[in-house]
Image (cartoon, rainbow, N blue to C red; front, side):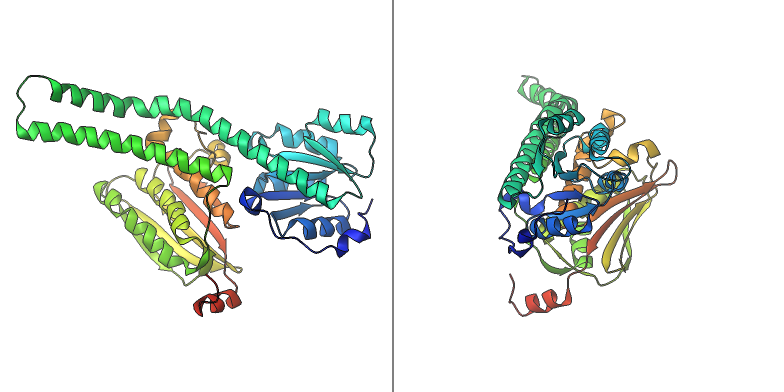
Length: 385
């Protein structure tokens, strides 16, 4: 059933503050008119993708990982119930909220939707205020659930990651507290051990807090037009010391001009996460290659290393926090950096990905939309902040 015509006449309201402005919604309906109406209502507030069948919805959801799915029930091919069951079975979408949409309002139909795994239900023609209210509530619930899960997962990571630095701190401190005379050089070495171990703990906690804030949607982004190679240069500069320590060269071989609209500081953090990862898994005297090119109206950044590579079965979950084939792979919280990078890139309507195979290295990619010329010109005149 097509949504009522009167809803097409309503003007979009300002986007609600907070997480809503960065959340992704997938709308699924076989009626193009319904899709257009829902997109008109939701796109001022959220990043919106669409699908016209259950099969397409599964493919799009797998690629974009939406925060919420508005799912029509009556569709050709697999219906909404079966689509819902398959979405719920995908671990990568375990936090996504699903709201069923139908022209019917029978209790039996609602119960069938809940049994399939849906979280809520709205009927067509729906009330726009109710729809937006339900979307906001479920996105807030998703955020809370993710943060709570992050806290639980962090306890396991914390136990693993803190064992070595805490041992270093306690051991060195005990030696300094002993009455046995210690020469200046040894005292300085022990103090260095304490400082290095404390710095590792501080960095781990900082990354966890950053990820929690990104997941909760409370980190403000202040985008402005900037040439992506400049941001890349910022990121390379922040990793220079680490690369030097590991005798790894970071080489920017091709940096095409590509003006993007991003929060420069946050995007630098995302790119640094990819560089840190490449440096960490590169052997001494190897080179990490960085490039920026423009492809089909988008800026594409690649970070390529010649490290050990990643097995194919782990690639789909590589950017998920605390997901690893072996907890030891989270050395220095490495998994957190990739999860943080994904959150930042997707908040800027970008895409992050990786291609890799064991023994052949890995190539990480960030795709971002190019800034419209009008926006760039206006910001150059100081019209926009």
